[in-house]
Image 1 (cartoon, rainbow, N blue to C red):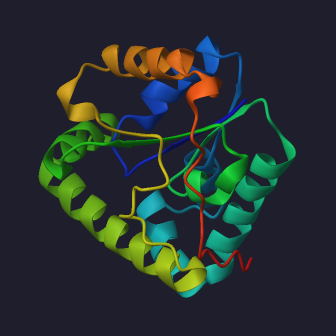
Image 2 (cartoon, helix red, strand yellow):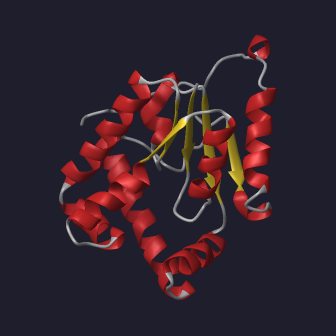
Image 3 (cartoon, rainbow, N blue to C red):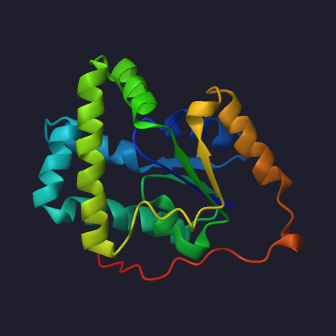
Amino acid sequence: MLVTVSGPPGAGKSTTVSALAEAFDLEHVSGGDIFRTLADERGMTAVEFNRLAEDDDQIDRDLDRRLRTVALERDDVLLESRLAGWLAGDAADFRLWLNAPLSVRAARIAEREDKSVETAFEETREREESEALRYREYYNIDITDLSIYDIALNTGRWSAADVPEILTAAVRAYDASTDEGKYPVEGVDYDF
């Protein structure tokens, strides 16, 4: 089974995917982990590396190519990245989108990264705007279009323990005999 989990920074993806990967015995591949590793290798923060990516499109393209290859070649993985649902396309068995209000996500990020909520809020807002422009420019993806996702969940409404339980129950309740088909991923230009 190939499951994708996408969403903006601070939505609870990292917390959720560990439980989902364990529940379905899937390997977890994280685009964010790969991105942060690449930033560390260059001695940069994720925010600094994100700014560099605005001028060097090869950073995003290399990362996205790696994630798409995993999605197309494997069926025993949970793929986590902002674009995972788009990159996996019809190969994904389940595409999940996690979100929460920016104020909630900024508070989570501030706690995780030991910074002020105000700083986390502004950095996150800037990062999201930058990424949305790049996704549109590179691949013709509107990151705000959630129509391709099987489930879009506001993680701000449930506890960190409840979110994986909700999603696990939904995936387990899936009955292929009632499936009317996946939403296709159309109009994307995978020009890596």
